[in-house]
Image 1 (cartoon, rainbow, N blue to C red):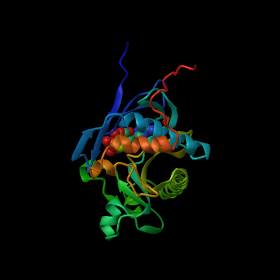
Image 2 (cartoon, rainbow, N blue to C red; image 1 turned 135 degrees about the vertical axis):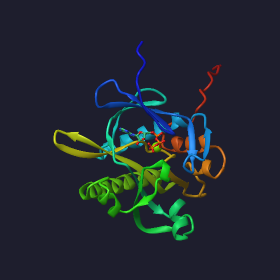
Image 3 (cartoon, rainbow, N blue to C red; image 1 turned 180 degrees about the vertical axis):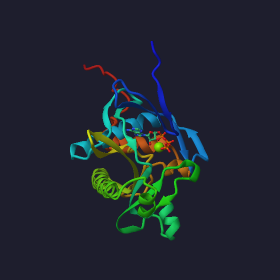
Image 4 (spheres, protein in one colour; image 1 turned 90 degrees about the horizontal axis):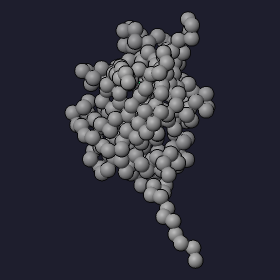
Length: 252
Ligand SMILES: Nc1ncnc2c1ncn2[C@@H]1O[C@H](COP(=O)(O)OP(=O)(O)OP(=O)(O)O)[C@@H](O)[C@H]1O
Ligand SMILES: [Mg+2]
């Protein structure tokens, strides 16, 4: 049997050539990295959870008319996606201060922001994905003004959707990051949500206790990452609450 071709291996995922032109297979690894890969570990089961969770969010987005790269799940760790031209920007939406924003502006983690704030980071591991402004993006040609407007609109729709879904299961969406790609319909380009949406790329806090249910559990050594991600999956109904099969019992 011919071996399929690996297109790219990143920190958390591997891309393989898909069965048809214009498609890719996205494989979710168990590897976890933080602080620009200075901290690394293998977290058993993370890839399986992120594959399912990303499918769940992308399906939900498609249902409300937000275009994404997701086509279908193939198996526990793999999904078929539409190949896109990734715009080399991380698009971050923040509802509350955390992470680098809290540090940069001296805000206490969890402080509500006056409105959702959209930030862009230039995707370059060597530079540590630096924060950039719209001026940089246009001057260096990473995206046009029209792309930027579309990206902001897309990111805010994803924010409304994710915030609502999370609120429904008692989780606060503090912030998240997405990647956006271009697809071509003849001469026309469209922007669609690509990469992944999972607890690796969001900050999620339990509404009642404030407990962190995202990658900060790994960054800050707060306990089991798979437990945190499983909790998110269970609440969303992505994983069965009853993980172990019910034993047959004798009826008298
Ligand atoms: N639909 C898509 N078409 C093409 N490339 C994609 C698509 N979705 C995601 N990607 C790219 O696939 C890679 C996924 O791998 P992973 O997330 O492990 O990368 P990474 O280590 O975070 O590195 P980086 O994102 O900086 O390349 C990313 O480079 C991402 O930009
Ligand atoms: Mg990535």
